[in-house]
Length: 165
Ligand SMILES: C[S@@+](CC[C@H](N)C(=O)[O-])C[C@H]1O[C@@H](n2cnc3c(N)ncnc32)[C@H](O)[C@@H]1O
Ligand SMILES: [Zn+2]
Image (cartoon, rainbow, N blue to C red; front, side, top):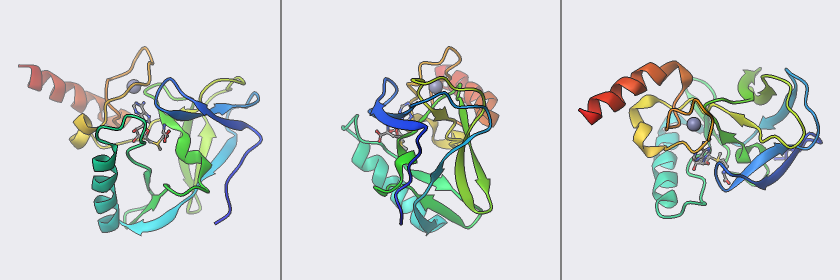
């Protein structure tokens, strides 16, 4: 596997979590910034790995918990490989990038113009069912408090309300 790199980015300490990826130059909207690469795994392997990662991350704030990315209905990508520089991109509830699957490859693409020095983020799109495992520290004014797919925010708000009652 060849390491991914891009003249557009730099890995630096992040206020969101441990390390993050930052724009090293102005990036135009719609740019394919970097590919998210890794090991192709089955859904069963993916469930086992996710549990393992979460266990490892408990009690160690600096350890990134999950690097798994959904590829299609049958396979996921385990991005926890040193060659995958994109694994350092953090989640935000107000992201400036998005992940798109283009001909079987996962690309991180800018959703708007990004200025040099800004941290790159995308919404990880996690399912709301396990929201309590993934507290969000993105710091965005609209942060919902957990790493959850935008399409499931209404469901999340209902779950949180229900828990408070
Ligand atoms: C793909 S890694 C991102 C890189 C990570 N910051 C690192 O240094 O390894 C994903 C992990 O980073 C952490 N993370 C990413 N975005 C976060 C956020 N908005 N709030 C809290 N933790 C976050 C979580 O532990 C998540 O499982
Ligand atoms: Zn957030």
